[in-house]
Image (cartoon, rainbow, N blue to C red):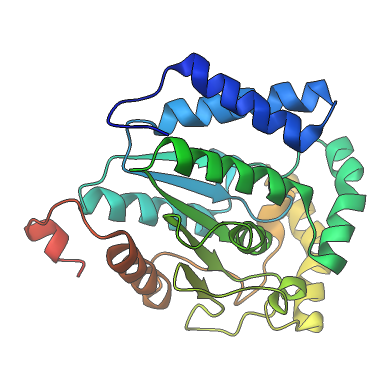
Length: 275
């Protein structure tokens, strides 16, 4: 465990390799990927107060610059709140899938297993990484952030984290299939409503949710014909299943959660303005 100064990186790598062997047994390629990913995250977080881990919605493979606008607004809102509170933070995205169609097809069996049973090996992987970071960087606080499928994944990870660890989760618009399995603790903030329109994805309003997906290809084609192509996910318009930062019922609970759970590094007149 870290005592006052960052551990020698070679020792950190040895610990990561032992953990990788425990998780992946004799599968050397996944072991190497796990170790490299964990070391990158460790180096990114070692001199920070807060590590924000964003779990994208949908397939879980969308990078920050390609997020749908309302999800991006929440990520930006969290970052700005941490800045106002004086924290030094890092942002890390945890991808649950690759970006290609082949990646998605390959992941369907695991996604279906997760849908029906709540079991997901990638949650085992991330929880092991978070426990590792908490052990080796005891002054670090970790904040999970996810919407829809990303919210469900964050909650699955939280089930495997000791509540004594400084790991917190913000979960917006959880996908209905996982609601019955979720846990809610003092370290979790969940938002199931944006304050304006009931969320059909959370409430399993099949008619409204299905309609959004059925009409999405027509929007996608219309944008292309107009010479303004959009990603398909941007064309899925589900009223109520959007959690924009400019909605007070979204931003205010998140700000309060961060303030009361993570605290503040220092107060100035700027910080007082969000209390």
